[in-house]
Each structure stands twice: as C-alpha cells, then as structure tokens.
Amino acid sequence: MSKTVDGPAFNLLALAAEVRNPYPVPHDRVMDGKVRRVLGDPHGLTQFGVNLQELAPRAVSALRHFHTTEDEFIYITEGTPTLTTDSGKQTLSPGMCACFPAGSGDAHRLENRSDILVRFIEVGTRKCSEEVHYPDANMILHRTAVGTRNFTKLDGFPY
Image 1 (cartoon, one colour):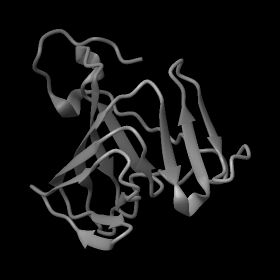
Image 2 (spheres, rainbow, N blue to C red):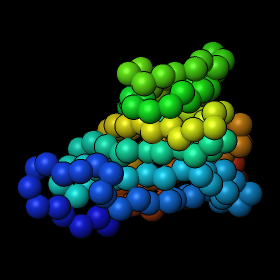
Image 3 (cartoon, rainbow, N blue to C red):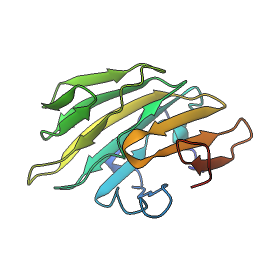
C-alpha cells in the first residue's frame, strides 16, 4: 500500500517507481521494461486509479486485454507507442489519448517499438469485483470484492 503524501501537489517523477509483473507463468515476464508510478493512492483517491507509466524500448504495457466493469483511459506524454487493438495497430504521439469503455470487448495494449522511452498517464475506474480478459493468452483475471485475485483459462479451468 502506498504511503500518504502531505499536500495536494507533488512531483510525479519523484514518486517511487513500481515494477510489477502480476501474470502467472509463462506470462510473468511480459512486462519487463515497464515501470509504473501510482499517483492517486498516496493522496487518498479510492474511486479511480491514476498511474504514470513508462515503457523502455521494446517493452509493452500489458498482455492485450479488456475490462468487463472498469473504464480505462490513457494519455501519451512522451514517445510514440503503438496501440494494438482488435482493429489493428495505430501509432500514438504526445497529446493523443485512447479510451476503452468497460465491457467493450476491445482487447488493447501499448507497445514501445522505438528506441526512446515512452511515458503515458493511465486512469481507470475501480470496481469491487472485476474480470479482465486476455484473449491472446487464453486467460481471465478474476478479482473479487474481498480483494482476492486468481487467473483461469478462458474455459474456466485454473491457470
């Protein structure tokens, strides 16, 4: 859990960076090269999450996924990531954003195909329970209201 930061203003880049690979084997290394700074939690935000994400060259933001109950928004601040969705690939640049409404079924992720750092802000709603579908990995994340997380295959069998 993040510690509280005094005052409403702070330096985004001064916050501790978090490297997290939440996926089970064999997908546990897919987010190598991704760093996340949690921005909202230190100030007590609980209804939506705000993160500053960084992708090193050749890194990806996540397995391609979609949320069943949570909206997701990204805003590019540096670099030129490639957005991969069910519709194909699109190069983004600073000042561009992308929106992924809950339940859309449009699996997405960002890929840094360049030789320079990509930085973006991610904002998402927080629901007590949620399913995140990873169609390319044959996987679903189930998060319950009490905070448990488990992965199953698309057919429901444990991962």
